[in-house]
Image (cartoon, rainbow, N blue to C red; front, side, top):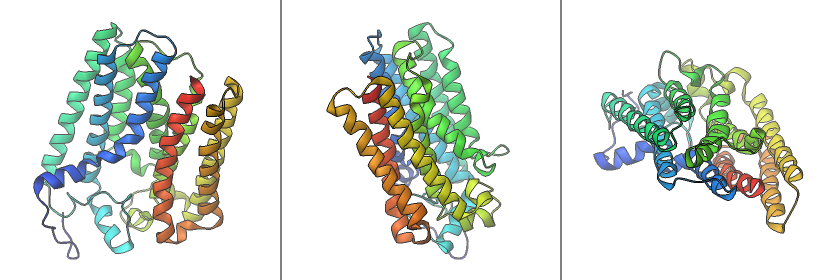
Length: 313
């Protein structure tokens, strides 16, 4: 799909495919999954390394499959970001929208990734003789698939952000534990809140630069529905809630060593600083400050995943 303002760039096909996969962004799902698997070992569960590795690869494939589906189905709004402004964390990669990669091929590859992820999920179930594990993976895979694919397209329903928080926060942590051990974790499931809230905020902060493009193409996501000012408040509330959930988790398990204190203080300071920058200093009105804040939100999410692992150990 091309517009008069966007000519297809000369990008080698291998580079284009690698760009469209957006592999660095899979870290927000892979890291909490690995933390969950590590917690199973730390809690004395009998762990299958083969099953844990298979589950990790499945999560990676589901993530890149979701990214590819987004490239194929978000072409109109992605192109409009060229007119309204974009940053390296938003608006897709434009590899499909500018005609570098055929949309049909991208959709087929995405479907293939989901298929391989399903096979890996079946292998994990076979290793642990626990078919119920497939339900966790199926929920995550189905949600990732319909996030951008019509007719569901959760991304335009105003609830896509919540599903991302649930799947990339709670589901990855719990499924990592279950894939490694074949059992559900014994820690409170609300312990995943810091991860879920920060990944929710990754989506929210990246909707600021895409606001006009999303609005003009009818993508009624959370930001379009509430507006940028309210979106900044929602972001700040989620950040403050992240800090509160970390403090609660630390109090629940006991402060313990200085490592546990750092595991709370480091992400808490970063989270409160980001809330201040976005909601009080209005970074959402300045693209030069918004992009670093978006990057820092991703870093915070990864730090929170590790911190939750430290606190739950």
